[in-house]
Length: 413
Image (cartoon, rainbow, N blue to C red):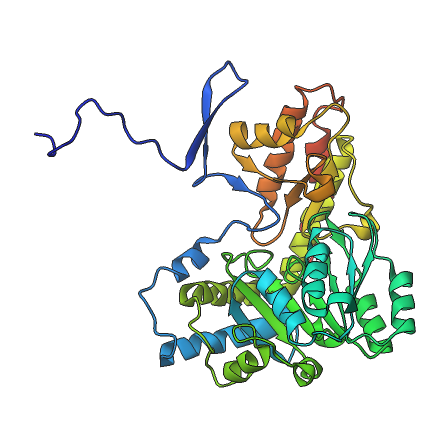
């Protein structure tokens, strides 16, 4: 006997996580399953089961003794991630919140801020700087994928007093690593605060906040750390907090740092996301940050070697290459439909496209967090299958062979 009102002839409800597309293999339909795929975006990244399980506990009071212990775990883990003995904290909100908070607490009308940009996230820093400093914001712009113009930046610092310099350490939109240590030295030379977007850097490359002298460092939970999105991680120097003049309520970093020191948060946090970040930081400490970075660097070298062997133009040279993301141009005659669409809908592999001026011109492979060698290797193999259907000519098996050669045996301890 059916349920009241049920239609016996009704069709099963399609799984909302399955997107069906026509395959080029015999015209058969193949599904993309969002619950079971190889997920290699440059953030968000795949989430380890341990981190998912950390969010499955019952509700927890954010003023309770139990949550204070979570905050203590977070403090230990954040100081380890940032390699700092200074103030650290979390804010509920994406890394863009952290960027805006870092600027708004020290820059306002009448202040000068210098932003160096060479990609979409540098542009975001510029937008924030203009919003708070207006005409006091100076932008030194390079094209996406090109080095930051340090000579022009120093010329600005010589000419006028600047309260803060803001830059992205790892420009994920173009797969470019910017010189954090050099930028920090430049800021010290001219006695200005250094605000660093390390959103896709920290945890996958070296960002020693205290050694470099970074005054405000911002990280996204969903990048190299491997946690879910929705939390921004911050490290703040004593100089930064001394200069802070908060201009709002929710983004008052001075108050947030003071309350964090008392094992409190000024507002209700996303408790279960904090639990996830705490677990992710514990896992980073267990693996060690050195091992995580070394694994990420090996994946980067192997990925770049494989793409080069397939005669796919890399967007930037090795000297500028991001350690957590690889960006490559489509070869002549090859489109996004030939690569990203085929990888996703035939092989269940998700990679990223380009942004801004590079939209439709490049693809990006994330190899941060818990990305595994086997996943990148499979991606290279499936990429070869996709390219074999195009006019692009390359030695069969060259990408897989180059990847394995570059990966090599595990280094001795």
